[in-house]
Structures are given as structure tokens and as C-alpha cells.
Length: 476
Image (tube, rainbow, N blue to C red; front, side, top):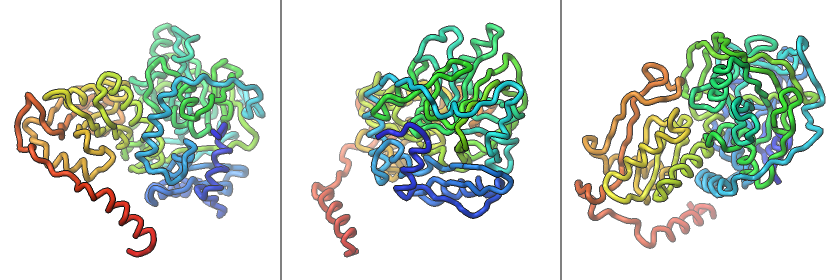
């Protein structure tokens, strides 16, 4: 049964032993972020964290690391918590094929219980805000789903974007937003500003677990995140109408914030400890004016810790980066077998593929760099043969160490676009990208000594199962 809100998912996590309630009093800084940081160092079974005894706050309810392990990610998709990561990616890809699944509109959304409007808007009275890293320039809403519409085609449901963007609190009714140029909200803002208009938006916090996943997916511009959520859930995604903007927002959100990105207004935003494991500096970014806040009674504030990988961010955007790239590549190159783009939000991708002819693997890599996600993120592509599992790093390292001749198999393409947050970019937003072809050459590319590769012995698979069985019986 899919989850319609965050609270239902938290209940399941607790039943499965994947939610840890911290009852001791903690400091908002540094304890909250330090605890979430620590979960990324525990391993793949780390729990979500719940805090409701935070010094200085009288009624705080804070959830951290909700998606921050493969166990939690599996449960978010309705899978057994011990489902291996490769199987989670394969199931994700299988459900993708059900897209689109139309959403279900509902009334009486729980976030309609309380309202602040106009001069009464005060984020600090609704949310228990705290900094995530000690070098951050302020408080951030970093796990929100931001809803915007194409100003030139506002009635097109698919062009209504639902995306996750970092939001810095710069006042009781002001936010700064970083719209990366390749992201849909930046396209919407550009169109609005060209017309001299503000861009209406809705910001939703504390969403159901699948909504949080799809809000970070690199989908096509006219593909609906709500219709993809339905495919991943196996049931229509519940939505409701936001009262001020009229936008479609998740029915089960904890908080819905409505307002506008003010046309051509900019203010310093940052620094912020980002998914790259580095701080980004302060930059002049667009400003949001908040006109209305709707929220559940005693809202749960869900936040996402980012820093040196791995953190919750890496679990959250891992499969939902791999699968869109796989599907987009296969549409033109059916030879592509699998894509592993889990590293630093897909700045590096490993692709396994069959080959049609010599040079084919490099063509696949170049196409990966020009997908919707690749344009702004992929800086390094490693291509391996179809019998190499891109999720098995020892196999990938074997392919790179035994099949790569740098003179022939490494391609550097200068001056391509990348997200401005990439630390290696120089200047920000421009980088040289690299292809490493670790595949076996095929005609007409004839070089090297690859004619007689070794293969696993026919009995090896049976022996692997036998050894695992003996280990489980405690005979090791």
C-alpha cells in the first residue's frame, strides 16, 4: 500500500526498526546536523531520526535521514527493507514503464488546518529552523518540492514542474532560491522575467516518500512528476489545489508555502555545504516573497543533511538518476544494459553496453552527456562491456585497468556546461568532460590482446550458492 503522507511512512519505518527516536534533549546546532551526518557513516542500514526534545523550541518535531539508507529507500518503494540496491534500481526501471499514471485530486488536504497570510506570514513561527553545516550562510529548506508552471503554457499539466532546489531563509517571509540553468524552474523564471512578470510558485515540505524521490528526478520538460509518482507508487498520486496559486500540490504535505519569485530581484545566497562535499560560495540569486503558509497542526519538519558523501542526498537521488539516464539512452541505443550514476548526483556515470561497431561506446558516452541530466551534471563517463556490472566496482576497476589505453580510449571534451556547484569547474558552470572507454575493441577497431578472455567456471555459480548457504548455517 503506497504512502499518502510522510507520517504514514514514518510509522512504517518505526515498525521495521528503521526509525530511531532521540528522547534526550539536544541542541539545534550542532546536534541535529551532526546526528544526521553520523548516519551516513553507519552504513547501508542506517535509520531515520526523530527529534522532539530540542532546546530552544517548545514544540518541535524534526525528521532527518528519512531516505538515508538502502533499507529506507526500499521501504519507500514498498519493497522489503533488505532488497539489494541493484534490485531496487531494476524495480525502479520496471515501474518507470508504467508512466504515465494520472493523479487523483482530493479535497480536505491536512495542510489546510492552519493558515498565515500577508503580513502575518512568519516562517520562524511555523518551522524549527537550524543550520546543517557550520559554514552555511543561514537556515535552509533543502528537502522541499517546488511547484511552478510554464508562463507561456500554464495549462499544460506536464510542463508544471515539481523539483527540489535549495532554499535559504533570508527573512520571516523571504527565501532565496538557486535555480540551476538546466532545471525547469529556471526555464520558467526566464520566461516570466522576459515578460517582466513575477513567477508564482508553491513550496511543499514534508511530502510522502515517493514525491520526495520524483522531485529530484531528471525527467523530460513536458513529463509530469505527479504522473511518474503514480507509476512508482503503483497507484495514482494524491494531489490537491493550492488555495492562492491554484497549483497542483501533494495532498499529504506537512506545509504548503505560496508566493512568487520576484522578477529580476537578486540577493546574496549561500554559502552552503553541498552534495559535492564542498561548500559553495555566496552568489546573487532570485528572491521569493511568501504570501501564504498553510500547515498541518504540529507539522513535522523534514530536513536533508548534505555534506561529504555518502549522505541521505546520495540515497535519495541515486536510483532516480540511474533509471532516467538508462531509459533515455536506450530510446536511441537499445544496446545499453545498465547505468550507475549514483556518485555525487551523477557527476560520474558508469555505463555498460553492447557495441554495434568500433567507436560505438564513445558515442553512447557522448549521448549520456547531452541528456537532460547529463547537460548539467555528467562530467566523467566510464563505459564497460555488457558482461561487466557497473554496480560492481571491482569489475569496473578490472575493466579500466586491463582494457584502457589512454592514448586511444580517453577522450577530453573541453568547455562544456556543468552545474555551477561542481567544485572542479573553471569558471563556474564550465568544465572539460572525460570519456573513458573500458570496452573491448570491436571491428573495425582492432588493437590490443583481448581474443581469449577468461570466464567464470560453469560450476562457480553453484559453488557460490553453496558457500553462502554454509555461511548462513554458521559453519564458516
